[in-house]
Image 1 (tube, rainbow, N blue to C red):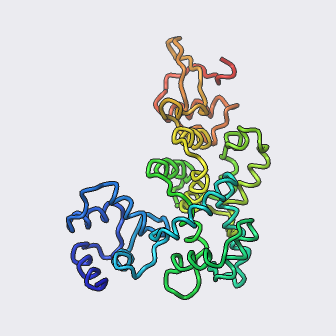
Image 2: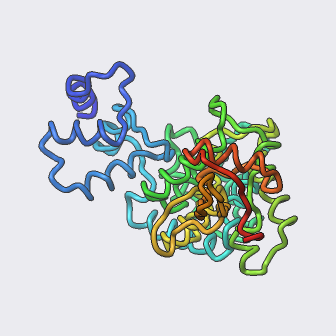
Image 3: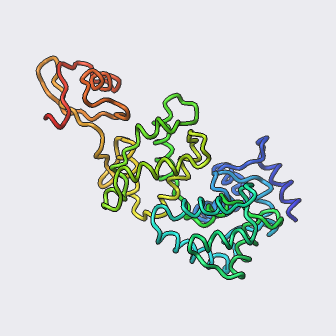
Length: 326
């Protein structure tokens, strides 16, 4: 039974919080002699990580194994409905999932960030996705965690959205760390607007939107709760929505690297945005140097450029020029 499984898992997992990360999940399955297929283990973890947090509680895992916890996509009819809805959202481009989230929250009549069946159906119709009562009932069944007739807006959209790969997640987390200079775990909206390179946004590159339009949408997307700060989870959510619309890993990596000026990358994913400088050294020789971290660096100030170079180990500087003057 699920209770017996939970007791067994508690014996195997010695942590106090009874929460499994991806690594500890693999350890538990290994002790149960069920970890031979790495891809299957990863797929199982993703199935029970309903909120996309990278964590699964022991109880969720035990209940899920015995069918006591409905898991979105675990039944064929649910997978079929999710697939249809997901495709319709993907056809709307980068704002498909985020736009649905905003619409559902607006139609959340009592403001508890939960939806009943009527609110869900009305919200989907308002967003232009028409569903039958059977389809709505099926989704409610698999997203209603405790059987109270309500589903979480966040968990519903997370269940519809394709998972972001570990490699993409790591890159986005790296971008956030570069923004969180303190580091205190949050970035203010003012700091973000000053650092974000809107000209590198895919819609701008395709000529579909102007830089001003992207900046306006970008700010609105981050500041959904009006607190003027962005946490790492909010930052990840933004890129999970964007990631769902981009199939090419190299393009996604290039977009993130160029937007937040993260040096490195290989081949098509190699950064092309960071400042390249012509440095004349004390002995008269010259080299081309790329600033590893030029976010917020005033490219018109020689002193700022020299200080940035010195931070990355280039110290014998007689003169420095940006690439536009080389």
